[in-house]
Image 1: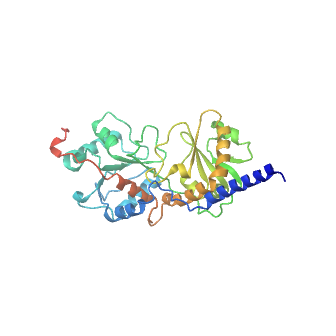
Image 2 (image 1 turned 90 degrees about the vertical axis):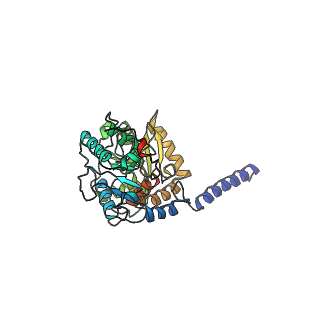
Image 3 (image 1 turned 45 degrees about the vertical axis):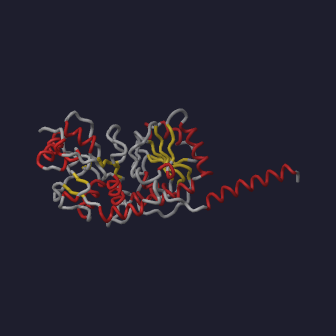
Amino acid sequence: MSTASIFRILLLHFSLSTVLAAHSQPLTPPYLSPNTIHPNYQNMFNSFKIFIYNSNSTFPFISPSQSLFYTRLQDSHFPTENPEKAHLFFVPFPSDLPPRSVSRLIRSLRTELPYWNRTLGADHFYLSCTGIGFESDRNLVELKKNSVQISCFPTPAGKFIPHKDISLPPVPSTPAPTSNTASFLGYAKFDWVKESTLVKELSSDPDFLIESKPSDLNTFADRLGGSKFCLFEYGGGDVSGIGEALRFGCVPVVITDRPIHDLPFSDVLRWQEIALFVGRRGGVVRDLKRVLGRACWERHEKMRKLGVAASRHFMWNETPEPFDSFYTLMYELWLRRHTVRYVRRESPFVV
């Protein structure tokens, strides 16, 4: 055997050893701040207090996740009847309440109680599945610009303010995963197959399984568990299944033509480590296969394991458990509890 051949074999052995060593190292938790999240969570759980206006009222909400959050909050230990001990104030109102009625509600809070004016609404939050727009009404402007909005994912364009607002993850609809043996490179579920160029191009590719709708939830679970990557078109397609994809070990691939600001738990999770983001410009299919091929070799297994670990945050448990959807949402609210309290005499509002 020639010296050159021996050198190539040693080089190949070294390369494989390096890759295997990298994959054998312990996984870093899928958190932005892995060293602080657990003590911060415990601090939140022990001390966080919320004052709910009209706490005994019940409202119809558009999505199951909104209803679950409101019910869980009311039944939890976070609410306080003493507003002076509250870190945040919750303003509940029905999903179908017209903007003019929302404006009247905010005006009544300002005139009848002192808490809104102390921060101009910055220590208040509300639920709105479709989000509040930038209206010209002063009360709605304050609500939109200052208060924390909890909206459903994905939030319509222009209705979400990064670093202030929070996204509600949807309620999972599939049973628990049973197998992670992947038989497809990519899977996509579309209810509008004929309208997507990407779907048309991938439908004839044997590496991908593209269908408009699985026959039942068990079949959908098999699709997720049997695919390495799950494709989502952000800004037109259905992206609500990202949390379920993580749970089944199917690495989400988000295809988008703009930055995404409303990903659930973006204050907690390292999304770049558990999902791939592919631009829509140019040859999407060509770029997509190139990105997936590289990811399969370099980091798919690591992303899959991190995604499964992160999926606990997307679970809506019948009885809330640590770090499930409800408690992670509470943690995100707790991160926003620091607000500037204005001196009341300096408030510029005149009713």
